[in-house]
Image (cartoon, rainbow, N blue to C red; front, top):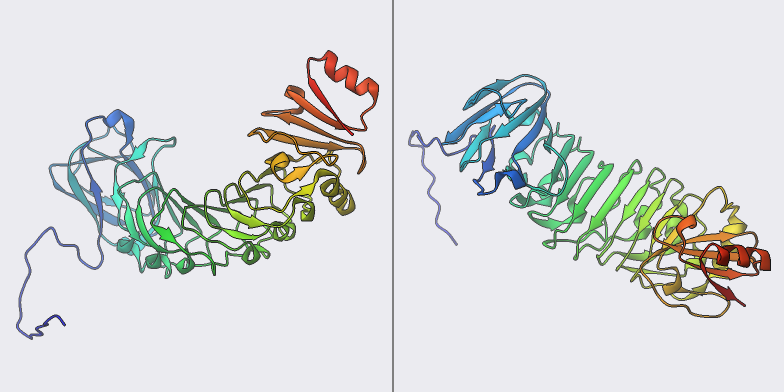
Length: 368
């Protein structure tokens, strides 16, 4: 056990590098190629704060070409801050007034200003943390559990740790990407108002059964994770447009999926039990899906389904599914649109249709 000394002696610590309870820290580190990085950050507050540099740095407000400053008093609202390409720290006072933090710009460039999630652990006003591609960011996810107002969380890369189960369930836009140092998720139940859920982290294990009440969810991406559950759980998500479960532990049969809303489905490397395209089409028809007006594009269709009792070569391209009935079915193999199909698999197509496709330069496979 470590020794601890408690004293009533009065003392004063005079160290400007220490943060007070009301302060947060942003770290800026010099890079030799500043044109390849993003050095700006957006901060929104509900009640003003002060930003102060230590070290040799400076910042500008609302424009990279504005006056160089080492301290600035910000009012409520949105401010854009651009940092000098130097090694220095920036202190933010009144951190509990901060409601949104996000990096300036878009694209794949690494973001240089770094943040520790623990600095904002008790901020009950924080609505949005959008920290994509902040490779030096850190913090434990459990520090976000008290953020009762948080609705947007986007963490891509970074040195984060902790269990996904500790996240608050008020988040409606969640993106966790390429963070192999976080885990869990088996017991995470998203907000019923969630519209986007992306969790592509190697040690994440979300359960599809916990998503069935997310009727406003439009995108679900669990690629390259240990997430699991029967694919039929997606049937309950009436607003779902995009579902990506590539390289996951998702099970079941594609023929169990009767979604009327999904338009893009990625299944490559999932653990589905083989079924047939005919059974899948019959399920969609029974559910009332008109494929002519409501198309669906599937990656991994031939990986998980036979067609006419046959298996066909697996490929990485999307397959558009088309049908007139449960027996007249066409699969257009393509990377873009039906018009650009480079191979067509047709069951019960008319000779005239086959001839038209071949005359257009398409390779046609007649499925018996």
